[in-house]
Image (cartoon, rainbow, N blue to C red; front, side, top):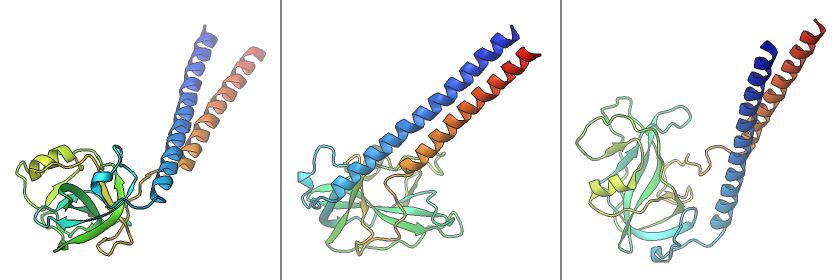
Length: 227
């Protein structure tokens, strides 16, 4: 009875480890597909007419002309750069009658939480170049205050909620400004957080662990038979 229970337990553990390995392989395939999509769209000519964007515009290059709303800066919290605390600095941008959010890049946080960084101001008509990307969703912490004040410090970029605060419609995506754009701040945003190679590495670890469990179980059973 003891051996039967051990075999069942081993089978369950090996199945779980194998499932984790195949899940990592599927994640690697998703990342490869995403990387290929990004490469294909970024090599195309930038879209300069916002009305000509496809129905699924994410990962397309744009070159848009418009004006920034400096009165409503948004700071995405908990953004580290080489271990230094900071924010991703977003501004609403009006182009051809459509408001969008533009991530201008990383800016360092002051040493005290109650202070805000000195934010750049952009006057007049500007041209932004960059990549359309999904919004950044992080763990939502308890709001520091129920009152909305500007600059607005947020834990996630949520277009629906931000549209209500700004009283203007925003699309379900943002523009990540290009590092080569003269308006860009320090750029540490990447479209793919984890490369496919890492997922392959994790998958290998799970499979090796599964074979190790099988080997140890087989050795234990053989030893038990000899005794």
